[in-house]
Structures are given as structure tokens and as C-alpha cells.
Image (cartoon, rainbow, N blue to C red; front, side):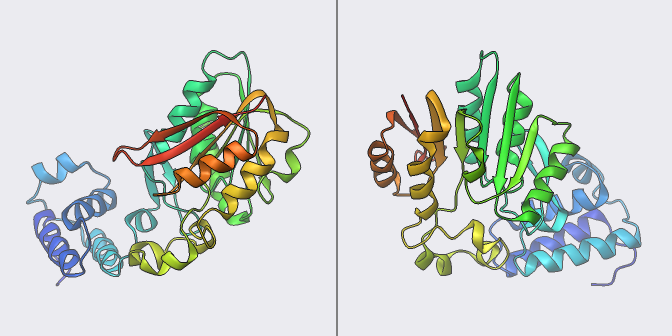
Length: 285
């Protein structure tokens, strides 16, 4: 495709056709997002100004992005941004791309902590920091710690906290919850990896070829980290403190038994938007 003198409409048609041929699930939507982000305009704008000539340097950028997406690189890794809970988070290939389902965990935590004079919160395996940052931002008088075993993930999480004006978070490069014994927590939150190792090869190329393996691989049954965290968490929780974790499809019964076996009570299972069990929580004491 020649680069000079291209309109928004021509780029959109070209992108939609190329991404469709590459078997991208949402070719038109992805095309719109890439063009809007490259031009710094809204979807409404590109519809209303479809015959506008795009500057050559922007055409080059858009064509580069279209090519990358046709290779199945996820849109957030191309643009460097993903919206979550009404905020734009910086995203790189060092962190998992935020999913809408995780907003349920955030909303659940915020509701649980509402009205407390102060709240101590831990986010285990924080990745880009979406859970910790949202809770810190929307729960008054909260003190949040966020852990991860990836220093690059923590760099992104720290960048997001600074960008979004959240300063009541401390970040720790550790495995799970080990160094947190100095404080008892009102709630511990986590979205651990939960895909069984044998199923990773069945994932779409957008996921398995680009997202960090360590953030996807949950071990032989997908629950390695859940098992460790659930067994350890009670000693770090206040009386009536809560642990809440995200789970994968068909894992609710196993994780429920883990909670029960670790002494948790008032165990709850929350469904996601597709009515799939997605969040499990329990209390201690």
C-alpha cells in the first residue's frame, strides 16, 4: 500500500481487510483503536472525518502497527495502553494484559473495605499494578502493598501508580507474601496464573506468543500459586480478614476445598459477566 495521501477511510479499509485475513477476532475494532491512538483522536472523530488525509509520518506509524497486529501482537502491547476500571494503564509485554473480569475482584474489594477508618491491603502478583492501584485510589485511608517476582513488572506498576497519582502503595520484589509478616491485613487480593501447563499450547497466538509465560502458567492443574497462597494467607490476615482470588474455568470446586481446608469461613463464589465462577473469597477468625 503506497503511504502518501491516504485518508482515514482508506487506512481503515486496508487494516480491516488485512486483519481479517490474519484471522484477528475483532479486525474492525482493532483497526479503529490503532488508528485512533496513532492520531490521538476518538472513534467518533475518525467516523466524522473519514475523508481526512493522514500525514505521511502517521501513515507510516499506522501501517507499522497494522503489520504488527496482523502478526497477532495484542493491541495493548502495540499502543502501550490498556483501559481498566476507567483509567489508562501503561502496558508492556513484561506484564499480563488486564482483563475485564479482574474488575470484579477490584469492585468486590472496594465494597468490602468501604466505611473502614483505615485499611491494610496486599495485592500478590501485582503485574501492571491494576488491582493495587485501583483499590488504593478508591478506598479512603488505605495502605496498600503490592508484590511480584518480576522486577520489570514492578517497574511498570510503579510507573502506573505515579502516572495515576497514587502514592499510598509500596512495591516489593518477592515471591508471594513472604516479607509481609510485620503487618496483618484486612484483605489480601490476587489474580494468580491459573492456566494448566498442558493447556498453554492451546491458547490463541495473541496470548501464548506475546504475554509473559510466567503470568499464564499455573502449573499442572493451574492452581500451583492458589494452593500456596491460600495455605499461607491466614497468618497474614487480621481477625475477620479476607482473602479473595481470581480463578479459571472449572476451578471453583477445587479452590473452594482449598479455602475450606485452610480454615477459611464465609466462603463466597462470584460469577463473571458470562456467569462463570471467577472470584472466590473467604474469611479467617
